Image (cartoon, rainbow over all chains, first blue to last red; front, side, top):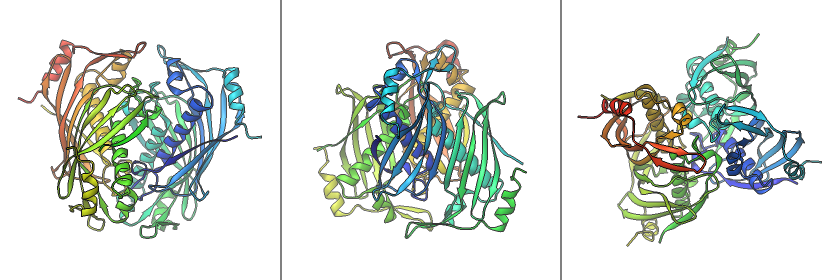
Length: 140
Length: 140
Length: 140
Length: 140
């Protein structure tokens, strides 16, 4: 199973050449992860932070293959490559209307507990419920 | 030789947990590349775009190793791993005040000609002058 | 008639205090104007720029009245206060789920022609068709 | 006395037309306020947030008068128009290299206490020390 959302390219995303400035693609990737946690994993980011946990990105690999322009509607897909105790490595791909890949890659997230008093950040195992939900997106 | 700049972490860079939101790190990386082209390669981005050329990022690998917070001053370093005809693969590292690595990785840029009338983007060889300047940053 | 869209507050919008960083609200306002031009005025931003015209913001007044947080869904409304030959002054309001105003204000846009060769920007009258479409949103 | 900083326009700031996208100007304004608090008012934003206080923007008026482009170096100035018990209204102006005004306006900030447990935000009087420091920037 792949987690899928669409996103329209907007004026704010593009650079002087009229194509998406790549850090904006990574904001779109973060939105995709945020939607996956809220809609599929029952862990909306609002509650993650109330509970002083987080899922920072620790590793990112991206190939940018095709420019995207204002008005393009991209299909964003996310799936799981590997689930560890406190981390998950996901694959992702953004495609344009014609099914051409604009970007694809891998992103690794770690489940952490944040101690706001000491600023310490420590890896913390996913719950069994979260693991079960993540496993539904594991690419066989 | 490494190309080096410093950047202070600001309020606008951090997320709800008080640590840099990772797409902001990639804006800082883009600034570093922009400074390198302007200060070391004699190709300021303002002129690149007047001349309808560009250097889009086609491949990015990053490991995020340590969180950064408001007020931290990071040292950003860039060097060359491989110079091709129309592309260059660079290494980069951002370190905090104590010399600890916050992030490091590799980024590949391609020199292109933009046809604004047709929206075509084509790879175009670097000039010999630009190649000579880039080669000074090649890690032996 | 008011032009209305909704937008969900996301992780990327909020600051260290967990509330929307105000420049992000203005990106949301720009999105609202972009949607209005595309959906109601038959002038999608993609085509505006192909034709070397633009509608830069020349005046902005905002009162920020209530913080917004991750997961809040805001209703964004836009209407017309005054239509000039080449400019339009709009009122706007963003409300939360309970109908409370998060922000409201006025924004003035000018229709311009861009000369990309000389970098000149000149005011240019709206077409009669655009004026007729804008007038539908004029608050009596 | 005016508080003054310079900032160079970068690739990430500009839009498809090659001019600064106006929400980026407001990030630059926020940086200016942040620098003023750190360098002139002895209240760096890092410490403001450790102490669960903040200074949200509640009112903003801006006139955008002249476009700015990549490579332009703007001089950003801030001064005080009115100091209340828990709020301060400031004037600001960004000028280009030739002394031409790119934007100018007024911004009102409120000193608040944040209750992170209940999400309450309450106005709180500035300390006498902070008031004395702010008053040095009051335009006679």
